[in-house]
Structures are given as structure tokens and as C-alpha cells.
Image (cartoon, rainbow over the protein chains, first blue to last red):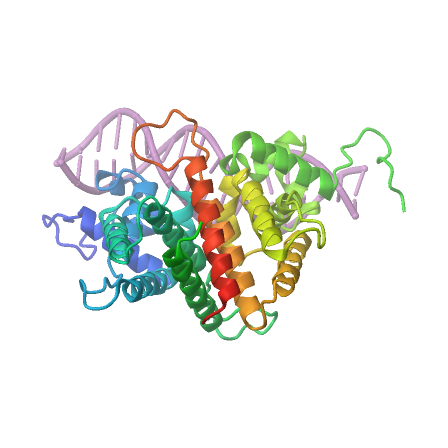
Length: 195
Length: 195
DNA sequence: ACCTGAACACCGTTCAAGT
DNA sequence: ACCTGAACACCGTTCAAGT
């Protein structure tokens, strides 16, 4: 009878609870382990119960994606020069995305990301570009280039279990180094703005 | 070695035939329409018959991916300056990948691509970087950066049915323009090489 | 409004068997 | 060696019904 849940006490399932469980599942078993059915069983509900709180799996993943971006550290306003701010912002974005590496390709199979956190990061980047003296329409291109570059690099970076050795594959440290070089090249190119 | 048709009127299924049908299916119905089962039915065989010619779906997609890269136009050796060659090579790669846009995220969920065509493009790029006077270890970083940038941009570019209008979404032409700006910034940054 | 059992319409892949 | 029918172990999602 009593299967571990007091009768009369409603499940109290909510959108946030579903999202939280999805995040846990993702962290534990990767993107392959995140299915509507395992998610439901983790929450002790029938699979179709999820559809009372989430439109479909795509919407869930989109929410998850934007959630992850909430961890990006935005540099404090005007405490250092804008180029340094851009560098730090992109580095933080890269780090956060690499920590959720298998989610990033899903980012790309959608059209980027349109959640509030993504929006915020775009706005901050645009501000910094303006402060750096980059005029329109160059700033729009630069915004796009920096975002695509950062997400693209994150998608290419894998967490190897350190036991690799089978073939020559760039380590996470090598990828980070290349990423930083490229950001530097882009920022100098943008600031010279000689197109 | 008997390279002729199988005796009788049997299917005579081969690796190349499977790959070709997969490419057709992809072109007609996109990546969502490419399943082992629809592929088998298109070839008039049972689904499991495919496994006599392909290890699994991942291996098939990998082969498809490298196949696509065969369409990239490699600039003729030494007819113009290396920077222009790099620009043309990346532009051609971008164009080819955008033509198969929904395949690109699969690129990223794997670790890049290790087929012969991908290898060739990497070698050519490296040659051009050397001709441009970029020394090691900067050249290795530059190679990685250029590849990631190009594939990342392709993943972000969508073919909109021109009927969009619902929201502000960059057109293919805008993406191409941004892509070219970014390549310019990267190449100037790389050539200045002031890390 | 929210959850359930059951079902629908799929997947990729394996197995034993036939030729 | 290559193909088949059948099955396994899954998917996401919908539907009618119960509370």
C-alpha cells in the first residue's frame, strides 16, 4: 500500500522540480541518460505526467540550456578595460559550457538560444564592445563571431577520462590554450577593424 | 576479385550503395529522416541487413560526414598568397557544411572528424599557415582555431524557408557576412602573432 | 488541474536460422 | 558471406479516464 509516499500528500510536481531533476540526471549520466522516461521514474511519476509541466522534451532541453548559462560570471561594470572584460566573459562562458559539454551540440541543433540568460550575456557583450569603441555595424558582427567561436570551441572540447592514450587527441588544457589564443586574435582584429 | 553484379537478381548491396542511399535520404528529408529502418526500406532490404555493410549508425554518419567534406574546393598550390588561400579554403568549407547544416551538430557530438577528407583539409590548412610564415606552436593553435570557427559558424547557420518573419533571426547572407569578417580578424591576428 | 494505465508509432540493434 | 523474420529493449508522445 504505502510505497514510500504518504497518501493524501500530493506529489507537488512543478516545473522547477522537473528542471532540477533533469539537471541532476544530466550531471550523473550525461545527455544520453536524460530521457523523459528515466526523468519520470526519478520523480516517481508516470512518463506522461511530465507533460503537465513541460510542453515536450525540446522545451525542457531549451530551459536546461538557459539554466546552465546562469552560471556564467559577468564582469563587474567598468572596473577594468572593456577588452579584458570581453576576454573574461568569453572565458567564463567557455568554462561553463565545457562543464556541460554534451549539451552543447543540442545548443547548435536549435538556433542558438533565446532564453533570458542567453539574452543577458548577449547584452553584456554588446555593451562591452561599445565601451571598447567598436562602432556599428562592426559590433553586431563581432558579437556574433565571439558567441559562435566560444560555443563552437566548447562543443569541440571533451572531458577525457585521462586514460586515453589510444590516439593523439587534444587535451582539455590544449583546447583552453588554443581558445585563449583565438580570442586574442579576434579581439585585436576587431579593435583594428580594418575590413 | 569479382567486381561485377551478384549472380541472379539479388540486391547486391554494398557499402557504397548504402552510403549513397543515406546521402539521398539526408538530402530529401534531413537528418531526422535518416534512420536505419527507412534507409533499409529505401534499399529494399530488412533493417538488419545494413549491418552486413556498416558497423552501426554512428559509423555510417561518420562516413557520410567525411563524404560531404570531399566537396570542399582546395585552392591550387601556390597560385596566390597563402592568406587568400586560407580565406578561400575556409569559405568553401563553410559553404559545403552549410549545405548540410543539420549534419554539422553530429560533427560536434563526435570529436570532430577523422576521415581521409578531413585529414586532407587539415594538412592543406597547415601547409598554407606555414607558407604564410606562421611558426610553431602558433600554427597548431591557428589550425584548431580556424577549423573550430568554421564548423561552429556552419552549425549556427540555418536555411530559413524565407517565410520566417516571426522573430528577428539572422539570414544566411548576414551569417556569411559575419563569417567573413571573423575570418579576416583571425587571419590578421594570427599573422601579427603577438601573443 | 493533474496524474494514471494503456497504447501508438516509432527507434537501433541482436539473434538464430536459412541460402 | 549475406540476408531474413522475429524479437529485445528502448524512445517521445497521445488518449481516455479517474481524482
